Length: 88
Image (cartoon, rainbow, N blue to C red):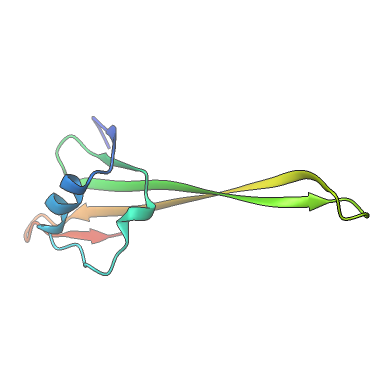
């Protein structure tokens, strides 16, 4: 993909994308950023969730936290004939 740029996902962007047949049951709110190719053929959503789990010693006292990061991505490509986006 050439000429990619990242920007935060806003309500306006989601409304614009909804016009191009994204199924409404998809939850795009879990993604933080969107990447769109310069020609608009490819769209990628990126997001991360961080889980924080407490770590206790043998006496039950809090010692620290374990952090785990889950990265998510969803990719779409526009069909040249219909103009609709499909997940790939």
